[in-house]
Image 1: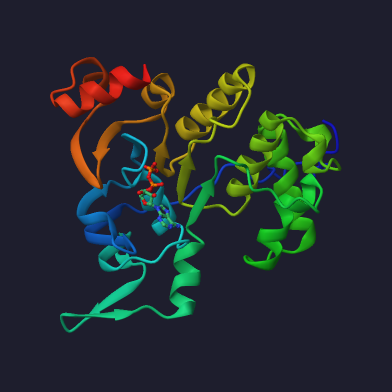
Image 2: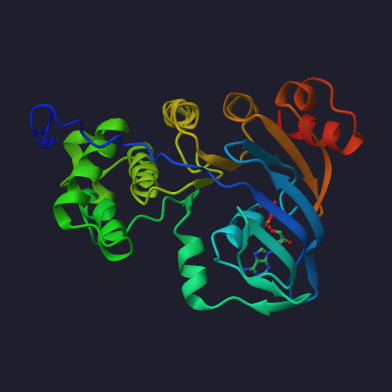
Length: 274
Ligand code: ADP
């Protein structure tokens, strides 16, 4: 066990995967514009607690925007986004929509973790520090607790021997594994995956996908995944939502959407990506 923290006899090491009740997600008439470009037009959909959902659809159909809204990296223009029984950007009071305070947003944001296409690791910090920074600063863990959690997660993603490496010294696949571990270190209840293997060399894709599939199956996270990789989508999700121009064209279990899509737009899209 390279660098693992010795655990006291009889004391179980902290389970590296986040545990606990996962909230559902609901978009209610969500509108998002960039200037004159209306990206989401009164979008409604929900994801059940612990459900794993993949978003597919042509480039520009709004998939990443949906994840970024949940991560509070974008602000919505109208409608409500629910995580569990609380709304994200706005609260409803007496039938009115009022902006949520910073403290509320901060608490809501803690439930959500995201893995990006471009890894987005902190370039000036070594691997261990990438994993401990958030838990110490945002969650208030002691340094020792954060290091123990980080080492458990590095072990889980197969990088126990890389804790002192800097991101630039790692392959893309290794960087993405660190990014996955970093997201999990915050113990999110909702995990968002945005095209997590599209920046990887082809030979590294399957390893990262297998890791995520195992994490998804072993944890009880609510998962939203954007991917063009249909095998991965089948592996990782209970349900697929097909988007076009900010609207859901059709939805269903992966076998049906990929095997017998009922909409022409889905057939066209699948033909283009497969
Ligand atoms: P997808 O993930 O399905 O490819 P996106 O959510 O990335 O789609 O983009 C949806 C639309 O929103 C596109 O037309 C895109 O150009 C636009 N868009 C996304 N982010 C921004 C931004 N920061 N500024 C302006 N337009 C944006």
